[in-house]
Image 1 (cartoon, one colour):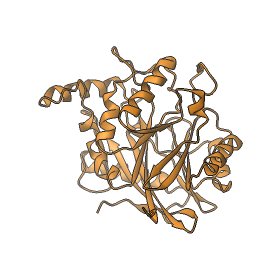
Image 2: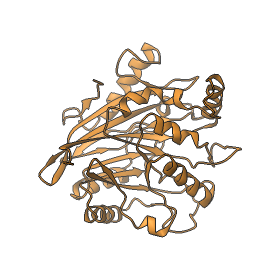
Image 3: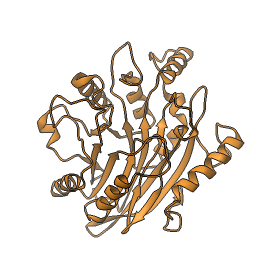
Length: 340
């Protein structure tokens, strides 16, 4: 089979299940007929589905570990496995798992999360069941195109994993570049960085975040760089011909902290085009969303066909566009993501 000439990758922000989202998913499961699920997250995720299915491959950031009842919220999260099966059901192909909450419930939570992703035939990287797994370059094969995904988190919230290799940690550019080189050596055609870092509830990257993004972009080893963790949207920048998304915001969440910023996020689709043996981002597209209040649902705000009020959608779009374009991304070629 011939390799395709193009590959589109969708990336989205934090999947962070606070207790209200569990309550609403439990209610939704009770309303559905005989689906056999204790929790139903598909109403929460439904708005994402057409975008996920418009990309060749879609990656989430699974912020919290999978657990068993009783589930818990901040500061030590555990969430039900149905979130993974529902992400898979709408078309997600995998998730990064290196976050500040990865070891909230220790090694058992890491392993349970990875087992759940594997059971649903989803790719994962960022945390590992074995040292051998951690040493394997994280590569997805999509119709013959090999996509390397280098993930890391700035912190484990002061906790320690049982082994240094259990979770990819640290925001050292040299370390990440070395991992990208390993992925290239193992055959990756495209390599992207997924970095969990930044200052929460802000609209601009930290100085160290921007320095890291630019170091990765200028290394020649990464074709695309994206970040999450801040629970708010940050700018997009094209630096030395490489796109950097400094903050995707939340994908789904329900924070107690009362700021509109943690109810907003963006989804980004990077289209890579092959030129000989090289792959470059030929098109970068984005769609903004806002999370409705109750029940919480993912609502795009780029068109009038949204699930929040017109006034809220308009204000959210204006606010998000101002942030996203702070470094001139639109003039550099960033496009709106419109569905066919």
